[in-house]
Length: 185
Image 1 (cartoon, rainbow, N blue to C red):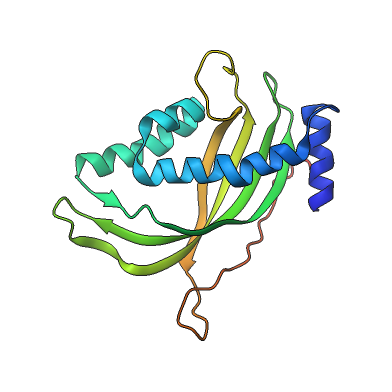
Image 2: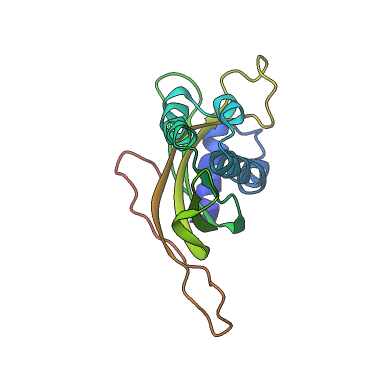
């Protein structure tokens, strides 16, 4: 699957593209930046690096938190882990789109304006599985971008408490995901 997915990235990005660089950009730059920006409510960064539909979706949650004067814990304890290319699709217009899944371990803690915890806890460690659709950014030369990729969709597939190991700390969980028939793998 791993090498097979890389063959598709080479096909879709072009023979001269460095698919390892794409994979590393995603794992070490794009994913941490987008998730951290979402948790922090950084609308400017998200608007720059997300397509319109994706931005409107994640921004709705950010707006609601700001309106209610609530904040999420922004700690990412580990991840992304289990980064997998799940599919690729040629789009009618523009660059092809790649679907990735990955896990992050995060603190599940929502606070009100006084700092009181209203959901979760400071020690409520969650393994969160995300799906992210990524394509080449259509405005590479117009915006001051941190990377050449645009997130066209972002979704939480599931989250669950991290299992406890014998040290009392959370351990990671592997993820599997069903692929839609119209995505090539």
